[in-house]
Length: 338
Image 1 (cartoon, rainbow, N blue to C red):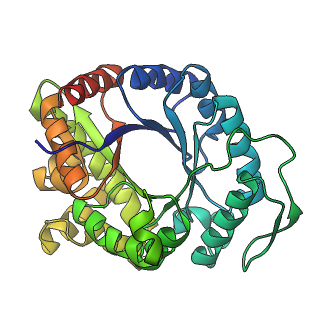
Image 2: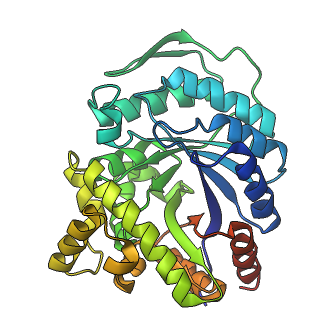
């Protein structure tokens, strides 16, 4: 069997800080590498949960996946992540992305995302490195700004979420890692790595670049029940993403291209989901193969290893179902045997 990617856990701002703490402890005990906290629009801010999880863990890394500069200025990102890195003993990772256009537009115009992300990374990285930042960007600026507290390390990793080709090239140029969101099929990773190398240029061979992919994961001793759970979750997410990304053709292409599903079947499924039909009644296993992981713990680990073969170095699972602690323990136990 091929070596598996590192396994991480996605915690959503739909969860309370107390629920996150419980899963964080189990994930660390089970050998997971990172907790990634998704700050979904208009739900809980993630920072209370991140700090709470830092307090009940010792080793596991703590990733923000992601902050976006349209609702949080990069100087504030650096202040918050610097404080988190201090509190956690150097375990913080800053994820930056432009966000989902339809959701950003509810509060502010979604303008010049490439410039917004470049400016945010430049300012936040400089501040987290201890610099006095003098930066005048096309979207955001910082003039003579410095973090006024001691840092625990000189380099906090900064990862960028990207789906479009130009954002992928930018990620390869300026970031330490790529965050691939839910609903991108495995073939997307192969294409993404080409764009990352293009952005990295001559530095590519010398960089230890992390490729992190989010994926919904249903674990159950009854494999059929796991696949039913996965189809329902994928149906909800796929339908929501497809509607929200309508202003972003590059994102729609990332979701659709290379998914292994015949175009007419894909469009029919989207139409049925938009009418409120459930994923278990609309989607077949081809959608799980493209967008999720499901089965017994052993079957799920086989799928995790396969995704590692596509170029993913860290797989971040959203654990589905009513027994997430059990699923986390089962995945960790099987992975330790590889």
